[in-house]
Image (cartoon, rainbow, N blue to C red; front, side, top):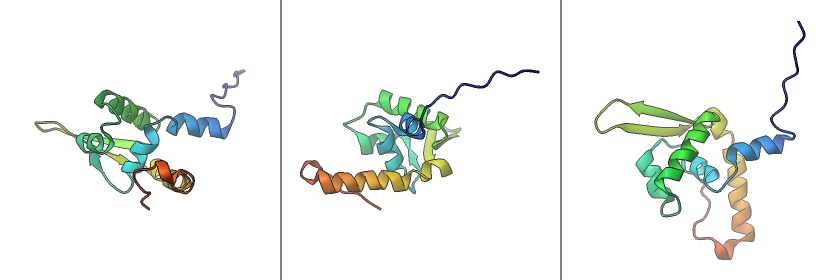
Length: 117
């Protein structure tokens, strides 16, 4: 049986990384979930007014599909949903922290908050 080779989705490893964590919101969401489980409303509070509820929902779904966060739904009224980092998501924390440090060192006069380790 002849199989056709599967076409790679990415040309470079950096393409894959940026596809998974790229954009304005995904790194911030991952950074907020560092060592913490948060409910949707808690994440929204931490990221607002910069992000809309609709955009947060979209980004969380993509991060879950890519295996970086886990979503736990509790069957209760009102519904309760919690988000936390998976092991793969946690593996990004050193990278995101270094991005934060770089911003602190090179853009300090434009930054409102400092990095937390």
